[in-house]
Image (cartoon, rainbow, N blue to C red; front, top):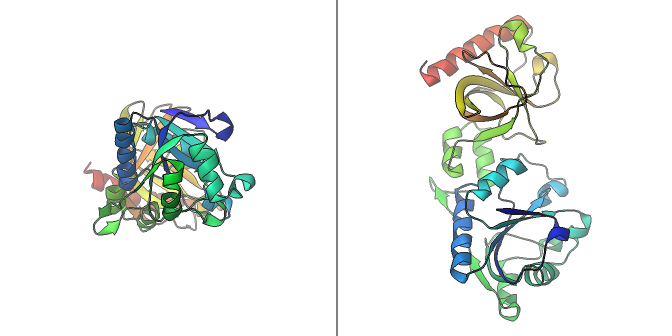
Length: 304
């Protein structure tokens, strides 16, 4: 999948099939949309183009929310679904002022040569969110493109959506979230040096930076961690470590029967079971005792 970073790198297309959205988490609903896009594009002999934004419009306008995937994770998941091109538009003040009709004409038609568009009935675009499915349909004949409304995917009688997955993760319902994602929720990143506080109480951890302002999961979890194709089991804490008055959200994992130097390597942490919420302890000794109990619960979950 070709990545096009920014409109300034977008070359004129002779034709394309397009879908637009944030695609946070690339869940089962997104997969359905993308599979329809790819199938339609191939049938028409056109490249499939997926448009997303960085930052998301919500974040740009100050409505911060937890993100299910960072850019690298999202791009990897999208690349597995057969899309030809991923156009990443920088969402800034100037772009936010583009009228919906101008976005359609100047970018979708003039630049991408759009012949077919897939869009959800709740998607909004353009200045003041004026653009929608109805606007695209009204301009389709003049613009020479078709419009297809995407259908929602239901999981346990609930519409699959990024917002619903965030809610499930915040509640610790990892199984329900996994059904909507189509996989267990995970966070990937490079192992870095920490403050080595865990070593002082007998629980050395690997540390992975959280490259997002708000994490969709917080607390203590039984996890698996994949490093260089090998899967390990462990218990993790993701939070700001209130016992030492921390302020930055960190992901720390204590791996069972593990003694390797993995600094600088990529790791994928898969969240399997929530043990408890994060809490502040009066002393490191009290924290150590709780971690011992957490470790027992994680091992019981993994049946080891």
